[in-house]
Image 1 (cartoon, rainbow, N blue to C red):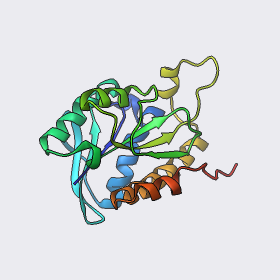
Image 2 (cartoon, rainbow, N blue to C red):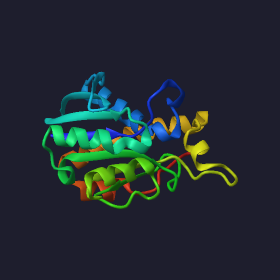
Image 3 (tube, rainbow, N blue to C red):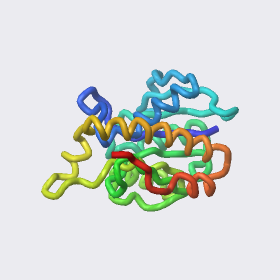
Image 4 (cartoon, rainbow, N blue to C red):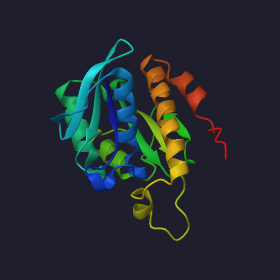
Length: 193
């Protein structure tokens, strides 16, 4: 069984913001797998189903970003899973260009407060992740204001495609071939301007 967690903030005012791209990828996965993500449990909204023959739990924590670890730890403990093998976390990343993705086996939080809290609650940083590039904050911008801001129309189109790419990457990761997923998806996107 895989627990796939998309990071974001609850509430209408945060919908479609850069910080909530994890929620968007969960919705894209739910569409592909025909899973309804509506059940309130584990300080999250979750959906259970099957994707490519594997049981999955899709999770959108409702704790606000900085407390994401509470929800993730609750799900991992409840289902008695091994986070080093059964957990995939999707987060935004300001160090990647808009639309680029990075697949990782483990690693630091890289300044991301949601990842930082998950690492603190799990007690380790060894879990799979998909980092979604949302672009570097412009000079003079506050980081929080930037990540809580909305994509431009053109960026939104690029991110919708990136969400589909992330779904492909996650399916490959679930097949047990994370190295192949890293080789295939950790490259610059071919955005057309």
